[in-house]
Length: 130
Image (tube, rainbow, N blue to C red):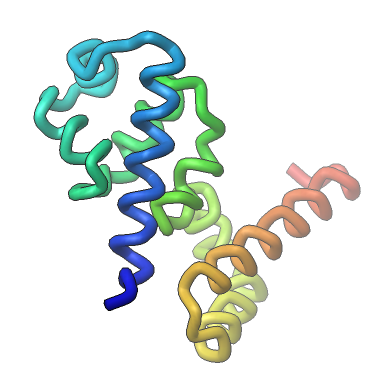
């Protein structure tokens, strides 16, 4: 039996959190306190049994000094800013819709979304928009 992509991303996410926490010499309790969750919940995350909410992902990234986008990617979730950008821009929304329709592989889809979003941010920066 192969692992489903979601259980694979949970495992990978958990391993990343666990390794980073240990390298920073933080206890489960310290990380839990910094993220406003229970020690048990952090343990479930590290064992790849639970994925945290967007809110907790942001707190984990700060507590463990991991790039926010990296953690969202590992969790197989879109960063809230990406979601906001899609909602704000009809053209982007249509592009994302096309990607969703045509690309069936979830992790490939996430990568494409991220790429589109980064190109979009780049475009805004280059043209001094926002």
